[in-house]
Length: 259
Image (tube, rainbow, N blue to C red):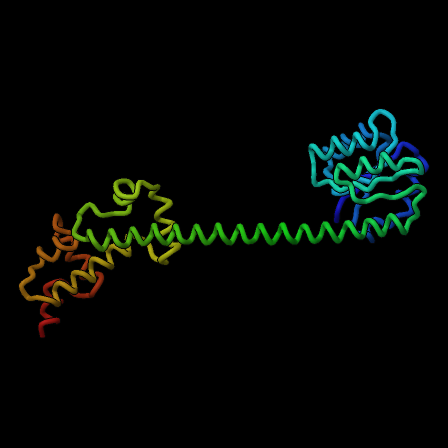
């Protein structure tokens, strides 16, 4: 529901309009009334109403001065001006500030309600347009982030595949020495994109490569295979991982694959 402020220096007019208009039926909530432009400006800055209904001739700060002041601070504020006979020049001046809604005093309930309904339709259309724009911006940002995430993860995967024999290979190493990015961020990113922890991925890739090497040739000794898949400094640990992964010790696997 949109907010509206009523401004007029005549109490009877303020109270009369406040009572006769079915604000909620028009899609508005009357947040209050003000006796002059100064009082109104304070309320507008504090409450940010979408619509201000204001008289033009008021003491302290006139309606025209209020409009100019508010438009400089909150240009989206919509004004409905209340003008008496003989105030056409003032009303025309208000139009120069972008005011499009003009009601001649005395104005009846139906005229005010009709104007409020017109404004409500305009505000709803504007809100839908802004929401659409924000949604498109969000989709664009998400697409850009997705492309960036995919690119980063693809870079990690390519580096791993090209450097499988590197004994120092780890996510910490790639984050600090290759990509210069935060390790925790990369870890979460990798899981999000692949559904697998990096450590599991690396171990799985190394074990599959080890199986491939052993299937390719009988000449590949266990320590040579371990060296080629990044476990050259600890062949025994490689054998333990291989058995855990395949169910066979490397020597058993070679025998099985040769039979």
